[in-house]
Amino acid sequence: MSKNLNILTNGIIKENPVLVLLLGMCPTLGTTSSAINGFGMGIATTFVLICSNLVISLLKNFIPDKVRIPAFIIIIASFVTVVEMIMQAYMPPLYESLGLFIPLIVVNCIVLGRAEAFASKNTPLSSTLDGIGMGAGFTLALTVLGAIREFFGTGKIFDFTVYPEDYGLTTFVLAPGAFIVLGFLIVIVNKLKTTKN
Amino acid sequence: MEKLKSSFKNMLLSLALISIVVACLLAVVYKMTEEPIKQAEKQRKENAIKEVVPDFNNNPAEEKFEVEISDGSKLTVFPAKYDNKLVGIAVETNTLKGFSGEIRIMAGFDVDGTIKNYYVLKHAETPGLGAKMQKWFSDPSKPDQNVINRKWNNNINVKKDGGDIDAITAATITSRAFVDALNRAYEAYLKVIQNDSEKQESAK
Image (cartoon, rainbow over all chains, first blue to last red):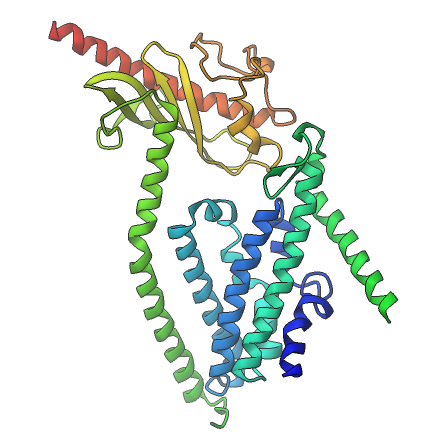
């Protein structure tokens, strides 16, 4: 039981995919212009991660080693396409703001990385837990990043106005702001980790 | 089950099987979502029309038609009628002059040429700069940048180009594209209005 719990929390703090493993930087920097965008991207990736981890761990003996990467990519890409179509049908506003980045989940290193490093060697249960944990860590990091950028850039958090938009620093909503905020977040996480030890 | 060996036959079989299963799954989901996706897009357009024209009781989406403007492109026009009398016109206009990609706007006019409202349907402008256009040009507290309820005076242009509208700070290109889209919409609007008055003349 404690082993399963370990797998679950591993992705959230100790091996947070964004802040510790530094995987999946493209969607991290690209989609976090607001908290809700970061959250949406995180949830979509989490869904793909859980499904692909589960399916790949079920099929791990059926897939010969030499063709495992193409097989993983096919499985991941189909789940991404499913997410894209469902989002377009039932959540059009979210689809509009994330549309461009959804297909990019296919090549997100986190998904392929967890498939390769974890799901292809572990049981379906622990693979699913790993997917949930990693997805939660990814969502958490993206939401925090998005919230900070939104706050400094436009004076809002989750579209709730804190101070007038005119005082915002537009830089934070643009690409440089993503790098700056991400850098500081990594510094904070590293600091916390070293003081713990 | 033992792990399959990487022999040619095994690799072929496994990849082929996975592909077939996945293809079936995708086909099912596509069929399932086809209708809702169409509905969502239609709904969005109808909401946009409702936003931009005065009250109407016909179905503009059903009475839509296309108008050719001077540069040869065709814009879709949605006439809004109240008891069969034309009260406003929504024009789905676009421009390719934006900062990144096409901008599509639903622009609404009433019959005497006043811009009633507009709604940005699609754009890929920079967040925080050009992406502000939905709010920027419809802020009633800032008359220099507001286009809502402005009577058309052939000077709907950004100030840098001799017009009288304040461009979005640091997003002049987007602002130019926005007024370009509006001007194109107005051109289509003029044609419709002229046709309509001619029709009424001949009916008399």
